Length: 425
Image: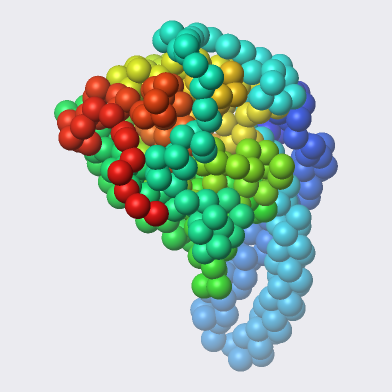
C-alpha cells in the first residue's frame, strides 16, 4: 500500500504507474474521498477532545444545576459525535477498498508492455540441446518410465490432479535437499512455512483482494497459501527490527496451492501448471534503501541462476513489462528454463522487490541508527519449484532409448546416474 500522503503529493506519478501496469483505478476519486475523510476525521477528533474536556469540567463542578446543564450539553455532543463517527466509518468503507486498488510504482527500468509477450530478454545461459532423435515431451517420458499417474490423480484431485511416482518422487526429494545444500553458510535461515494462513496476510502481501479467484479458502476462514512469501510476511507483522539485524534472509519450504483461474485452456496437460505444488522460496527483509534493494534483488536472481546452472538447464532472464508486473511489485525478473518439446523457455523462477508496499500494510518496521521507525523493504525469489522444474530436467536430459540422465549434482542423492523404469504399475 502506498502512503496516502505520497499519493496526494505525487498524483501524476501514481496515475502513470496505474497506466503502465494497465490497472484501472480512480486516483482522482480517491483523493476527493480522502479530503472528505481528513475533514471528517478532524471534526471527530475535535469533538472527542471537547468531550474529554467536558467530562473533566463536570467532575470539577460542585453546583448541581450547573453540573446538570453540562451533562446535558455533553449528551448532545455525544449524540453528534456518534453521528460524525458513523459518517467517518461510511467514508472509510469506501476509502479502504480504493487504497487497496492503487498499484505500487514500477521502477523506471521496467519496460512498457501489456503481457508477458512484451517482457524484455536480459540474458541467456547454457547451450540449447540438439538431439539426434525426435525428443519426447515430459508427459510421454514420465509415463513410459512410470514416474507419474495423471488418470488416477484426476480421479482423486480433479482437473490438473497428479501422482508423482517412483523416480519422480526421489528426484523431487533430491532437488529439495540439493537446493538447501546450495544455501549452506549463505546467511539464509531455513524454514518450513505453514500453508494455512489468515486473510490479513493475503491482503498484506497484495494477493487479495485482486487475486481472490486464484486462491483456495477453507470453511474456517483460512486460506491455502500460494507461496511461502505470504506466511513469512505474516510471521513478522506488527514487529520492529533493529537496523543492525537487516537484511534478514530466509529460505523457506512449503506446499503451495493455486486455482489457476486465469489460466483456462493453458497448459492443460502435464505438470507445468498444477493446483498443488512445492516450492523453496528465498525471502529478504531489508532496510529502506533503494540501492541496497537493487543489490539484494540481483543477489536473489543470481542465487536462482546458480541453481539452474548447477543443474545444467539452459535458461534466460527477462525483465517483466508493466502489464506483466503485479500491483505490489516495483520490479520483477522472471527466469525461464528451456523446454525442448515446446522449443521455448518457460517460467521457472520469479524474482521481485516491493519497497515498503507490503510491509506498510502489515506494519513491519525497523528502528534506524537515529532511532526513527521506518518500514522495511521486502524481496522474494523462487529458489526452486517442483514439479514444474522436472519438465526441463527430464526433457533436456532424455536419451534416445527413453531413459533420463540424472544431472551430476543430483546423482549422489539418487544413488544412480540414469532413470530406467523397472517398477510395475
